[in-house]
Length: 307
Length: 307
Image 1 (cartoon, rainbow over the protein chains, first blue to last red):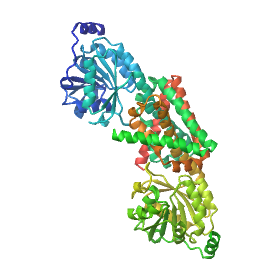
Image 2 (image 1 turned 120 degrees about the vertical axis):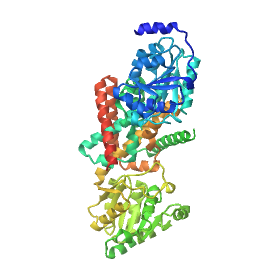
Image 3 (image 1 turned 60 degrees about the horizontal axis):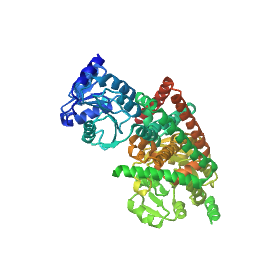
Image 4 (image 1 turned 180 degrees about the vertical axis):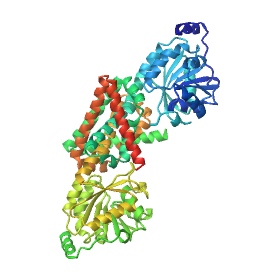
C-alpha cells in the first residue's frame, strides 16, 4: 500500500507549500515540544492537527487547546498536511521519516525537532522526491516532559537550528524559516555533522557530566547518606539535566556516539589538567586556568543576555 | 602586644556569652555572606559591627544598612564582641583565627563561615583557652559575590553545618544554634573531616566538573566559535558554578585537596563507566544506569522541596 500511494503521489504535480498562515500543520508527538509548538501555531495557521499514540491522549490533547484536532492515525493525517512536524524522540523520528514520508502530499514540508541531526538528515535524504525535508532542532526544553509541561512561548528567543538538505526546495526552506520566525526563535543554519559536534559539547556531554556527579554522590551516600542533605544550589544546578527523560537522552547518545565519545575524552583530559595543577600545588597555574574558565563562562552569559 | 593582651585576657574570669539578643556581633568580611548575615541580625542583637579591608568600604557598608557601624580595625572590634563571625575566604579565616583570636573577650564565641572545616577547626583548636570557637558553614550562596549581592533572608531554609570542638562550651554552642535559628537556617552538626568529605562530593567536585565543561567548550570554540551560540539552558545550569569567585574556590580546593582528589577520581571512574556502556552498545545497561541516576536526582529534588 505504501508503494502504491508513493506511486500515486509521484504522478501528481509537485506544488510549493502555501504560506505558513494557509498551512495545515500536522504535529506528530504531543509532548513538551510538540504541544508547545501547537499552542504557538493554533489560530495562526489554517489548521493544527496533533498525532498521538495513546487512545486517551486524543481527548486530553484536544482539551488542552494546543491543537484544532487530535488523531491516532498518523498516515491519514500527514496525507492532508502542508507541513509535518516530527516532535518525537530521535529514533522514533528515524522510523517515522520512513513510515510516513511516502504518504505526504507532493511538495509538503517535513521538519523534525530531534536533538541530533546527522542520522535524521541521512534518513531524510532517502525520502521520495516529492517530499521537502528540513532538519530542525530548537535549542530549548525543560527537565519536565509531556503535554502538561507544554506552554505557549517556549521557543521565544531560543536558537532554532535548521539543516536544509541539498534537495530541499527554496520554498520549503522559506516555510521553515517562517515557522521559526513565527515562534520568535532565532534561526541558525548548520550542516548536520557540525550541529552534532557542537551539541555534543554543550548538551550531551553536560548530561553525562551531570549524571556522573549524581553517580558519585550515590556512591558517597552508600557510606554516608547525609551527603544528600548538605547538597545545595550548586549541586542542584550542576546536576539538573541528569533528571532528563531517559528515552530521549538514550536516543541522542546512541545517534551521536562518535561526537559524544570525543567530547567525553576531551572533558576527562580537561578535568585531569585541573587535577594535576591541584596535586602539584602549582597555585599560580591553577588560578590562571580557573580564572580563564570563569571569564569565558561570564562572557558567554553576558553575550547571551544582550543577544 | 598580642602576647600581652592574651595574658591580660587570661586573667579575666571567663563568662558565658549573653543571649543572642544582647550580643554585640562583629562580622569580619562584608561580602555576600557577611553582609547578608548583617541584614538578618541588625536590630535583633545589641549591635552589629562590620569589619572591612578597604577604607572606602566603611562608608559603603554603613550606607547599605547591614550594620550599625563599620570599621577597618579588626583587633579593636573583636575586643568588644560577644560573638565574632569570620566571613572571609578560607585561608584568610585561617590567618584571622591566629591574629584576632587572642584579642577576643573571655568567653566570647568565634564562629566562621568558611567552606572547608578540617584546617579551620585545627586552627581553632590552637586558640587561647578563653575563646569559644565553633566551626560553621552555611550551605548557600550565589555566583555573584560582594556587598551589592547581599540580601536579607539569604540563609532561610539552607543547611548550616556546625562543627563544635571538644573544648567548645555548651553556652557557646547554644549561641551558635541561636544564630542559626534566628536566620531560619537548619543546623547540622558534623565532624570537620566528615563535612569536608561530603562537600567535596556536592560542591567542590561540581565546581571542577563545571570548569571542565567550560574548558571543553573553549577548546571546541577554537575551531568553531558557533558553539557558544548553540549553548542553551542545559549548559547554563551545568556550568553555572564555573563562574564562582576564584579566590574563594582556590582556598577551598587547596584546603580540601585529599577529599577533592578522591572525589575527582571516583567521578572520572563514573563517567568512564557510562562511556564504556555507550561504546559497547549495551543499551540495556546504559538505560538502567541512567535511569537509576535520574531517579536518585528526582528523589533528592523532591525531598528537598518537602523538607
